[in-house]
Image (tube, rainbow, N blue to C red; front, side, top):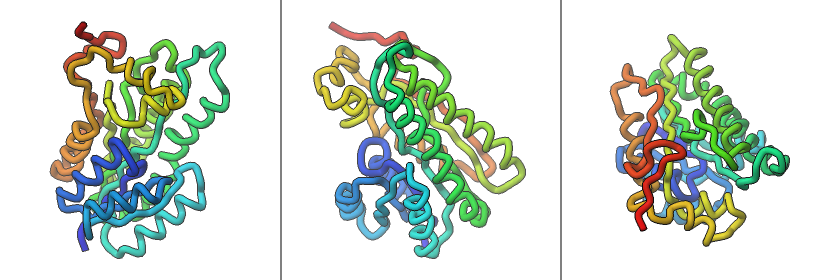
Length: 251
């Protein structure tokens, strides 16, 4: 059996691109997400090197089902990509929706915690485990209108850093990928409640924002280094974005 890689949030964007790339790297890919129809289409595209598992990272029972499905495959689990996450709203802290904040914390932080806890024993048992968590430059740079997402991503990066310390001496690498501006089909649209025009404005004038395949490439590179090499944190932005608040836009 091939080495197994689990990718959460695999139904679109970075997750789907990562599933395709890791399958090409020789992993048996377990694509996990809530939208089963999209997962089935992705797995059909990839072929026999992929398995679809419907999973909601905000549900203990659903994550337990994911762990059981991975165990049933019988091969060594050597890679987990915690990619499920997202943002809702751009309201200031003073008027931000508590429901939006709760959703972002539940998905970005507790979802990462649930999946990591469920799969960590198998990763350690493989003797060559790797956990890659997809964070954001929001994990270390606040910005106006990003309060809830910034808070969630700061918490996620704290989780990752703590986990790395706690696993010192064990055969599991802990890696964090922090993208800046990435244009995908859904992230900004979801953030703006389905408003395509507002989502498009985020990237207006930016010649080449990153795309999902760019991040998948980074994930694959860090995960396929020799096992003694741990890329603690990889920050990746398009050349047009010098910092969170500094983006070159052409007319």
